[in-house]
Structure formats: structure tokens, C-alpha cells
Length: 335
View 1: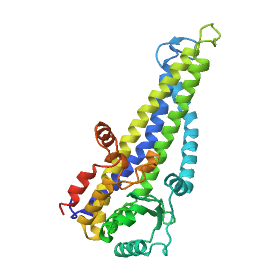
View 2: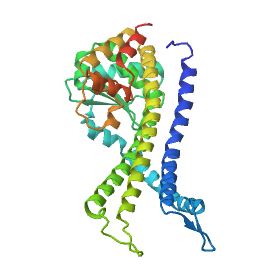
View 3: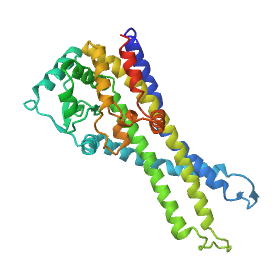
View 4: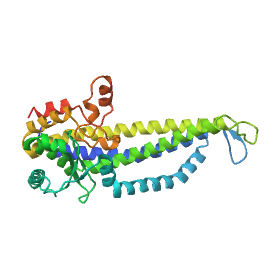
């Protein structure tokens, strides 16, 4: 990746990200429509207005049910976004154990951040620290009031000034390119799908335990317990497909932006080799590995799971939001 055409590449990535972001609600609505259509097809036909039985799916009824469901989906997504908008900072701090870093506690970090923000003409973000002797960092926030750069105590203590400037420059580039806003939005959408999947699986589990044995009877004497199980299984499959699509779109967003943040961070600090050296140190001793939330872990400069070895590492890298660290280092060392 060359510095020439950087702004063009950023604009192209932002346009692609907007298109990918628009796919999330389309995926959710598509999942609901498919679910309604499959459930309608399980009825063994339908009666028209004249009382005649027809094979197939009553698409008019499916469309009507979809339109009735649509407002609830819009309200549910709106509520979820409101929660994410007002409480994303608190949720991330709680998940990582971050706390504010005072200037008097570490003026060195503040001086580096201030120099870099003045160099690129951006506002000073908040600075948080995680008491972790290992190394990692991330940027978060969706507006000027919440933009934050978070560092572990290990990365502050073990990197020299040039390396630390490269890491902070990487995180500031995420903020400048609006990556943090986009990633938090994608986290919200993936969370919606995960919540729907969780509810559906729990309902399916309860049906199997208490109501899936065919004990309940419909008016014509036939058991409807099996039908309930089939409907819930269809729901699980639809949710799984939707979740897969949302994850794939999130990967496309995140991986490109990590490369862009590396290039922007190297340009900002003026020393690509320093950032490459920092990434090598971080990958050898990454912190924040005990954060159990994968959605938060995607914000880190190096994902802890990518540093493990063997088959599981290869599998993790295949489905990771981060590109391979060695590839990132190799690109930076080409400058």
C-alpha cells in the first residue's frame, strides 16, 4: 500500500462501508420475510376468499404479516441504537476495565497524543488506560465527546516513544476515518442478530423440554408440538444465515480499515518501521485477552486470538476481523 492516493482509497473505503452498513437492516428484514414465507409454506396450502384450497404459499398473507411486523422491527432496532449511542462508552469501559488516564499520571502519553493531534489538525481525544502488564490498544467512540484512545499499562511501559507514537497514530487514524463509529454500529447490528438467535434457541430448547413431545392437540386432533419445533428450527436456520452474512460484511469493513489505519498511523508518526516494531512486540505479548466479548475485541490493534498457534489459530484468522499481523508488518517494512 502506497501513500499516493491515500485520500482516494479512504473515500472508496468509506463508500464501500456505507453500502455494507446498509446491508445490515436489509439482512434483518430479509431474514424475517424468509421466516414468514417458510412458516406459511408449512400449512399445506391455503384457502382463498371463496373457500377453495390452493397449494403453495399465500404470498398476500405473507406480505401482510411482513408489513405488520415491520414497525416492530424498526422500533426494536431504534431502541437498540439508542442504547448503543448513549451507553457504548460505558459498556466498552466495563468490558475492558478501562479508566481515565490523568495527565499528571503520565505526561509522556499526553505529550505524544497532543503532538500527533496537532500535526493532523484533529481534536484531542480522551485517553484511558487498562491496568494490564501486556500490550494492546484501541480507539472507540462515535462523536467528539466520546472519542477515546485506550492503552494498556504494558504498552505504555514497554514501547519507546517512536513505537508508542506509531500505535497512537494508528488509533487516531481510526478516529479520523470514522472507523470507530462504523464499527460500533456494526457491533450493534451483530448484537441484534445474536440476541434474536439466542431467544430462538432458548425457545426451541424449552419446546423440546416441555412442549415438543406432541402432547398439545389442535382442534382436528392432530399434534401441533412437532409443528412448533419445525417453526423454531426454521427460525434458528434463518438467524444463522443472517448472522453469517452480518459477520462477513463486518469482516470486509474491519480488515480493510486496519490496513488503512496502519498506513495512516505510519504517515502521521513519520516512521513506518516504528509501527512495524510495535506490532511485532504487541503480537508477541498481547493484552486484553481476558475480554470475553468478541465484538469489543475487534477494536484492539492486535486481536489476541490471532497470536495463538496451530489449527485453531488458522481457523481464528479465517473468521477474524483483523488481517494477519505478519502481513501488516511486512507491508509497513516495505516503506
